[in-house]
Length: 389
Ligand SMILES: Cc1cc2nc3c(=O)[nH]c(=O)nc-3n(C[C@H](O)[C@H](O)[C@H](O)COP(=O)(O)OP(=O)(O)OC[C@H]3O[C@@H](n4cnc5c(N)ncnc54)[C@H](O)[C@@H]3O)c2cc1C
Figure 1 (cartoon, rainbow, N blue to C red):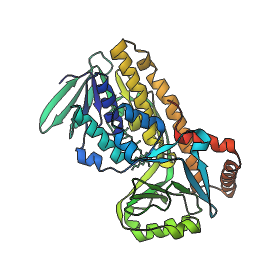
Figure 2: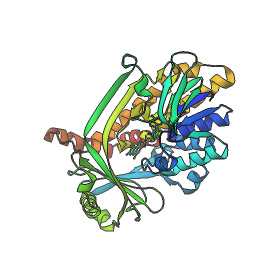
Figure 3: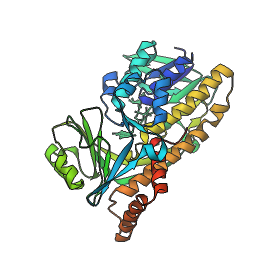
Figure 4: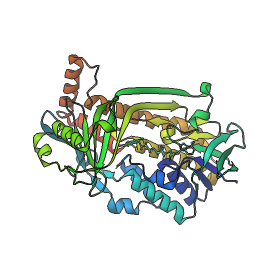
């Protein structure tokens, strides 16, 4: 097989890039390890920056997002029995869209189908080759058949556990990492959410987050020790614990129900630098991971795709390689800002087991300062709605 851009990974990053390039007349092949149903079964992010929403529209897959997604003009931080609002719209003039990653991925697949895009599922043993030379290629197996895809560029959109980053020699890549001593237990339930807007609840027993995915399902999460497993938490025990972490009036209004999905995600900050090795470019979770506290994961992936899409379009339509040369530097500058914000939100709201009484007083003071200063709140809001690309 021959293509211009070979993309490894059919998650949001890979699909969005292939769709945007296709619309500029650039040929792509996406190789995805899992089946389409498997990819669509993953329940993950749900808060989209306005810049990401604009990219979805540019990719001609934003129609359902604009129809069914919910525009959120603010969110709440609950602490010490009260609830305080961060008014994103007033502070920044911008908003976010709450629209599940599963729905967004479905729209991207539909978009790829409509224009005849090539997405090969259940591609086994995918491997990039000769990426430092002028003729890179990718190999994979499917149904016993070995296939080779020749391309100009290989794009690694295959997530944190993918093959692309791992194929770069250790002395050509540097990894930065922080592993947090807790995880988030997430439960999706078909119940009316306790609030139309997201609530982050800081509590001495750990943080909890309440959000919605579409008009009905609630997506609630709470901090748990890494030693906990999903089996430790019946639906009843989960909702009882959530009630404890909410202000009384909100806890009283909470409607509980049986879970549709339940999982624990460990919290980790991770960045790999540079995001280019020869003609292999990394994008999204393949190069960086954030704890979900600041809702930056999917949004940071989208900013990589923005830079890479424009860089590749300039290469193929104008013969201009400046964007490709600058890609890693530009993408990383924004990635690190997302890392900083996610780390800050995580340290602001979580209970760290090793924290001293002094650390806890500082954490309380950080929150008190935030809600006493419009400038501090504006900084939070500016990061939450998304810094400019
Ligand atoms: C449990 C969980 C909860 C999350 N919650 C949030 C949240 O609340 N808010 C938020 O902003 N972000 C959240 N995230 C992060 C967000 O989902 C990711 O940032 C986003 O999915 C990144 O998209 P991606 O396409 O770069 O990577 P992925 O979505 O990981 O897609 C990578 C794709 O590559 C495929 N692949 C992997 N290896 C190979 C291979 N060897 N060959 C071929 N294909 C391969 C995978 O099957 C996958 O489809 C969460 C992530 C997880 C794991």
